[in-house]
Image 1 (cartoon, rainbow, N blue to C red):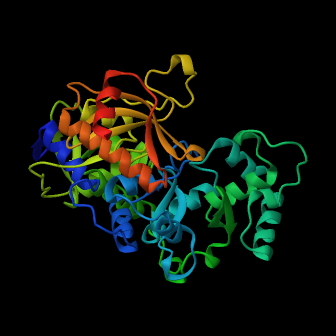
Image 2: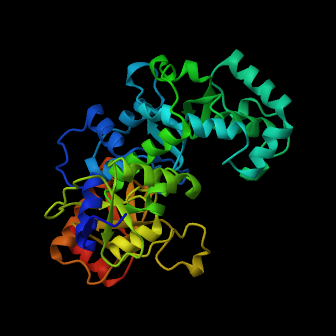
Image 3: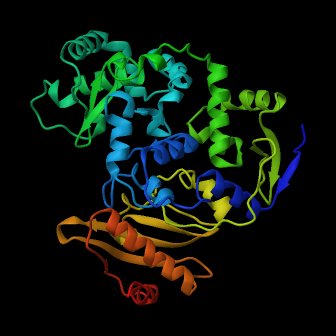
Length: 403
C-alpha cells in the first residue's frame, strides 16, 4: 500500500515534539493529574541508575512540566492505594508504565516464563534452578516486600550484574515472568512483592490481551507518543521484535488505525495516526535526559534533528568528545547545544563542566533560555547556584546570560 501523506523534516520534527509533550504551556503548579496525563501520553519513563544530576526517570517530567515535587512521581510509582498509578516492568528497558498498560504486557511475562525474549543467562537460570525460584517465591509470599539483599546467602562481595547471587537471579526471573512485581524501593534497590498485593485488583482481573492484540496496542501507543516513526522507531519504543512488529503494523494500516507516510529524505516508510495535526511551530526550551523518549533512539534523533548523540559515561576520559554526563538542550525546534552537568550536592551547586553549541549556534535569546533552564533546574534540585567550570567561548556567553 503506498504512503498516503508526506511530511518535510521540519513538519515531522514538529509532529514529534508535540506528541512528546513539548507544545504546551507549563502549569504554574504541577499536581498529580498533570503528571499522570503526561505519563499516559508518553506511555512510559525509562529508569536508569545513573545519578550524576538526578535519577533519569525524574528528568523527562521536569523537561516538559517544569519544577515539580519528586514526591508526586514517587507516590505514583511506589505508594499504596489510589495514589499509585504506575508499575515497573520491562517497557523500553526498565520502565515505569501506567497501570492501564499492565494487560498489554501479560504476553511478555508469559514469554519470559518460557525463557523467550529475556537475557540468555536468565532464561538458563529459569530452566535449571526452579527449586531456588520456588523457594524465593515462597519467601516473598511469607515475608512481603523485600529486596535481593535480604535473601542472599552468598558471603563474598557481590560483583557486577552478571555475578548476581542466585536469589537475585531468582527475583529477576520472577519479575520478568510477572510472578512478583516492584512494591517500592529502598534507596535504588527494588523491593519485590506479589502482584496481588501491589497492583489493583481491577487491573489484575482484566482479561489479558492476546499477543497480536497487545502488540497492536503497544504500537499504537508508540505512534501516539512519537508522532511519526519508521517501523524500527515504533518497535523500539517498547522493544518489540521485528517478527512481531511487521505483521502488526500491516494489520493496523489495514484497519485504518495507522497510516503510512513519507518523511523528507528518510529511506524507510514511516507511520502515523490518521489525520495528524502538525503544529505551525513549536516553542519550547528544555534540558533533556540521555534517556528521554524524544531522543533515546539515536538513529531517529539523527534523522529528525541532524544531531548525533552518544552517552560517554563509559568512555575513558581522554577519549570523551563532549563530557561525562551530557544533556542535550532543546530550543524550540532544534537541539541547539550539549551541556555537561553534575549536581554537586555537598557544594550546593549545579556544575556546568562544558557547553557545546550546535551549528549555527545559540543566539542571544537561546543563550538566555539555556541560562534560565539551568537556574530552574538548580532550584528544582534544591541547589543554591549554577557554577560554570569551563572556559569555552560558549561558557563566557552563558556566564553573561546567568548574570
